[in-house]
Amino acid sequence: MLNKFIGIGRNTKDGEYRTTDKDLQIYTNTLAITNNFKNKEGNYDSEFINYIAYRQTAEYLSKYSSKGTMVQIEGRVHTRSYEKDNEKKYITEIIVENASVLERSPEKKKEDIIEEIPQNTTSEYDNEESDIQLDDSDLPF
Image (cartoon, rainbow, N blue to C red):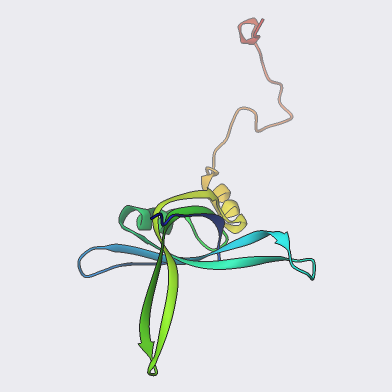
């Protein structure tokens, strides 16, 4: 028997990261995967898939992904049930075995770029009005 899921999509929210009393790291989120065909109204539908990651994978996803981040997850399909109001409820989710952050969300990209720019740095090329002095040894030929 084979139980394998591979999916690429975007996180629908900032995930929930927590550590249990026994120091087990857990990360949960929902992945939106757009179908590659249109419905009868001419729109692309999406599937929303809950996933859970543990240990180092949970830490990785918590640190590098957020709402809107495109991620690839690989894992197995798991179904569990619980009782609520005397009615049995079922949940199907993916237990993540491997994950990759493929693209950060557009909002995060802007923040990351701003954080990477060093503040209060100057260069000899900052003043456009001054001449740049080159020596023959600076030429590549």
